[in-house]
Amino acid sequence: MNTSSGKERSSSKKRFRLNFVDIILLLIIAAAAAILVYILASGTVSGRASDRSVKLEYKVLISGIRKEFANNIQPGDSVTDTVKLMPIGRIKSAVPSDYMSPTEDPRDGSIKYLKFPDYIDIMVTVNADGMLKNGFYMIGGYEISVGTLVSLRTPNFTGQGYCTEIYEASDSGAAPRAAGDNVEVSEND
Image 1 (cartoon, helix red, strand yellow):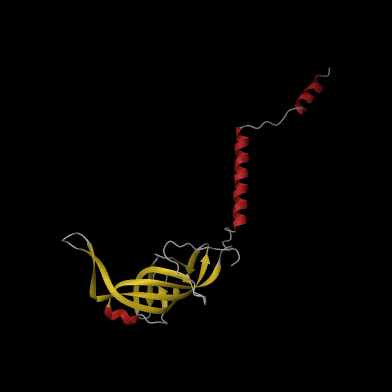
Image 2 (cartoon, helix red, strand yellow):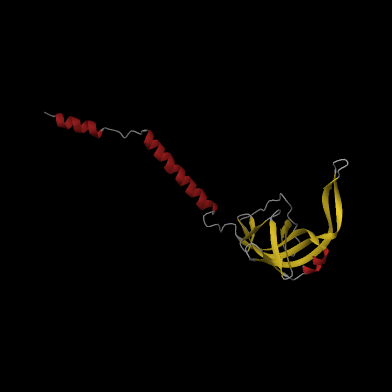
């Protein structure tokens, strides 16, 4: 007679059992929540956590140009990137030096540096307004670091060379950053 009430009691005592699919879904939800918390806490979604304006000074070594072009690069000239046609600063100085090319000596196979009298190297120092974005220096949308090939154009010269130094210009005379140096970003900047 009370068979229906017995069935109701047994169904009310049923527990929820976790199966393999339920565990996988819970792990996926937990991982997604952890990733969301990490992204929001680090500020990488907006990218604004480490962005700041900086005054930069960088040096570009233009190698192996003819001597007659030495005076075509003058302090005060504006510099434009020849690839993106973006302004990338103003020339502070241009210092010529002898062009030395590594050449193999056929007699013993050693490497000798030979001076080519009709050619020079020019170390061009450029001042620019830039941004420090997520640990990288940016000038007009152009990422620049030590070792970057810089294609530059001034009113009287077009050429390319490698960035050999970069540092934040300041009155305190910040030390240049050489190859392998890391950019530190602090929350207090």
